[in-house]
Length: 209
Image (cartoon, rainbow, N blue to C red; front, side, top):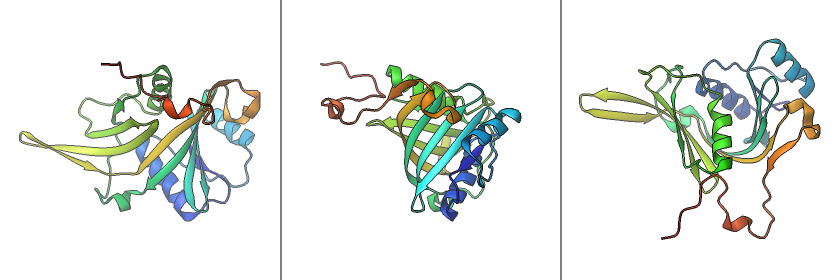
């Protein structure tokens, strides 16, 4: 289930709609004035497996919260560089089949954990699926891309269909979204420590030559 913060802008509503095209089987729910507790309870009652909450600042999508149901965990990400499908300029209608997933350079312990949280949004694809969703780590920013491909003889044509955006994790809690600060913190980003600028959190360190 995909929903937004209260009183969303037109662009955030469009982005939520396109995120549903990226995630097979996802549906969009109007937030209205519902509290977080009511949202999570409604999703549990309907048998929803994941709740995605999008937020914005001045009409610009800048936050994504992913809550696995019924017990968690809940991962919080900053979101940047959101580009809608019509702005990407790809195909008019992307296939809704479950895609193959590429998790690139998410090979540290934290990277694997974040990759596991993300990949469980997607069902197992059919072998003949022509869609690929990529989560590529670049300096602890996860680039999210959605492509379709076609075979023409010996050639393979790859085309981006969108939406396109970047994610950066900053908090993982072991509980659900409605538990808030009562849920235990599994991991939190500490940008102000003395070594923060030297570390790559999502990728395993490169061995010295």
